[in-house]
Image (cartoon, rainbow, N blue to C red; front, side):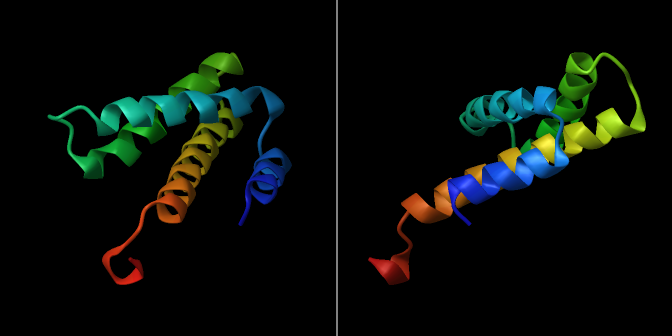
Length: 95
């Protein structure tokens, strides 16, 4: 999956206003990853909660649709991070 396919997938299911949440979650995840006292397993959960609150705030209502938009934003941010990580980092068997 390349960047244009990922963007097309996100635009197909997400409201345009909620796409900014993906960018905010990527930055937040970057900082959470570098915080020493936050375990890695908790970062996706924190990003999901932050995504829900940010999406509901940007879309100005706490509805099921907006909560789903926040969950989708967290999923797209996590997928984007993993695609970047898996593409750029070398593993032991590939060196």
